[in-house]
Length: 70
Ligand SMILES: [Zn+2]
Image 1 (cartoon, rainbow, N blue to C red):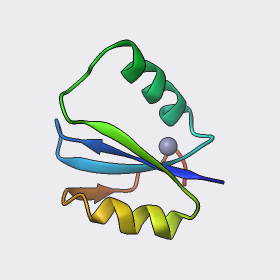
Image 2 (image 1 turned 90 degrees about the horizontal axis):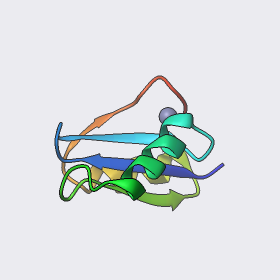
Image 3 (image 1 turned 60 degrees about the horizontal axis):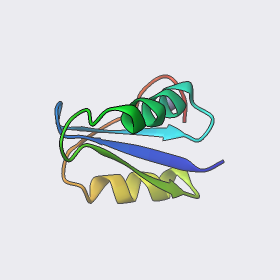
Image 4 (image 1 turned 180 degrees about the vertical axis):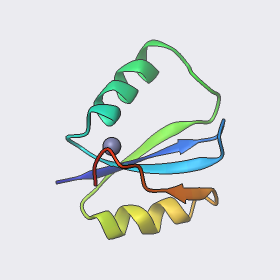
């Protein structure tokens, strides 16, 4: 399972999701249709959760662990 994380500049959070998460799938579709917020974007794939967490921490925003997956 690969992991992706969303750099949310609007709320100053980073959310990690796995590749099978509905939030991730919808989020990518949504972002493809409309530029939601400048500079907010998805990162990944990262092969492990710990790797995703490490990369997400380098963005410099607060890391949130959503309850939807991962
Ligand atoms: Zn998720």
